[in-house]
Amino acid sequence: MSKDIKNSLKNGKVRFIIFKKGGSWCGVALEFNIVEIDKDPNIVLFNLLEAITGYIQSAIKNNVDISMLNQKTNKEYEIIWDKINKNNHKPSMPNVYMFGKKALANV
Image (tube, rainbow, N blue to C red):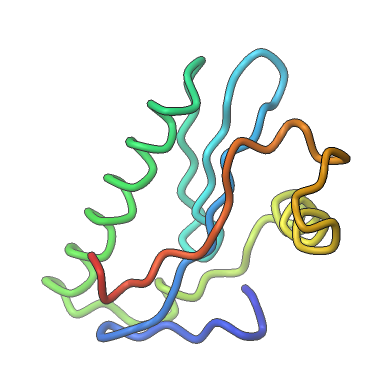
C-alpha cells in the first residue's frame, strides 16, 4: 500500500499500471490487487477500469472494511511504480503503456 494513499468508502485513489510482460499486456490496480491480462493494452485498460468500478461499487454496497481498499501491494508492482515515477516515464521504461491514479469518487 502506498504511504500517501488512504482510501475510504467515500474517497481515495487507486494507482494503476498497464505494462508489457512477456507477450501480453498486464494491467494492475495496486491498492486492490486486481490484475487484467490481454494481448491488447486498450482491452486491458478497459477491463481494468471496469474491474475497479465494480470493486468499488461492491465495496460500497456491502459496506466492506476499508482494509479491502488499502491492501498490501505486490512488491513487483511497487518496484515498477517506483521506477516509473522516478524516471517520469522516460524511454527507460518502454514496456509501460499507461499509468496513473484513479479517483474513487469518480467511480
